[in-house]
Length: 394
Length: 41
Figure 1 (cartoon, each protein chain N blue to C red):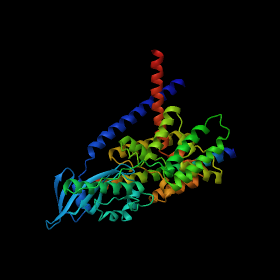
Figure 2 (cartoon, chains in turn purple, blue):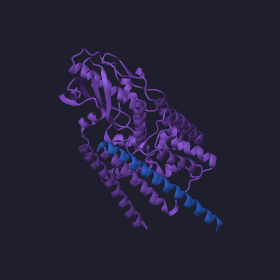
Figure 3 (cartoon, each protein chain N blue to C red):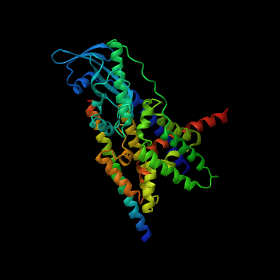
Figure 4 (cartoon, chains in turn yellow, green):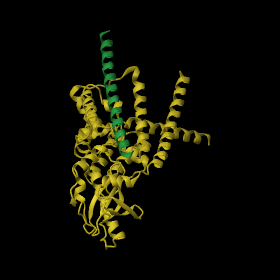
């Protein structure tokens, strides 16, 4: 019996190490495959442009099919929700934008589609390097796709200013510096972490009430109001090193930092049980139907390992394609902002109905957070055990 | 006996729900990856 257990542990250790190695290999291979053909993408998305002559790295003199000069085009990028968003920005001889296109993006497809369908790119046409515009200042964003909208505006502005200053030789006014955005979601998140930390201690009397309090705040504020839950694409972003700008996405750092800090120091995951908005939505449904924890009996391990394989595959694919959001199958945005594919709506429907009878079915069987946390805690345990044994030997 | 039967039925329903969800998740992943590959190549 003891031998069987130690064999199982050995196998799990090897599998965890193999998973880590696969992630590293996918990271390197993805980096090699990344350099896609930018020029053909520009020509396909900007049909007015027939000829591009490179004048500087990623900057071209452009002309139409009659060989008439149109101005200059540059490719600039800015960090979006999932990673760098690359824009082609065409600027005329007066330093005004006359065409823009998204050349490459790591955004969640449904959100980017929302931005493009709203004809958001048209709002940038005619903007000049002299104007001090940004999202919410001269340009209205697309609701629930703020990060993508901001990345488009900032990349275009950068491109416009670059062409005006470096190529056309205009005197470009200094860009206004960005200030750190510390607002309601950041404050609420810190409060939720603090409440989760103090209330989970055994000496605290009102754990149950506090948990419902944090869950409802999580559901309505982080879920319905801001739609900022923890997603697989955040993990992919972290692995890819696509760190968003600190001043505009402080929330991202607080959420990831808080979760991994608690996991490393306390070996506890405060997010899932205490304020995950989708977990709270399931528990509310569970209150209606009287849900209980339901097991899949002898198939328990099969489902557990199947999910782990799916998540590993999802992470490897995201690393290979250099796109954190591409394998994000979660249905959080589907519930909180009614954005998603038909399949996501179907998954959401089944999960919400079944959560009336099964306690947190998404968290138990489908959430990518489970395998990620399992892997992290397993590696943490391996390292601490090795460190402890080294200390004893010393 | 009755309790055992009801437990098995519940287990069967949970397994069916999980399998359906797994299939939908896999279809969703397949669709988004396919779309991404179409854009890239």
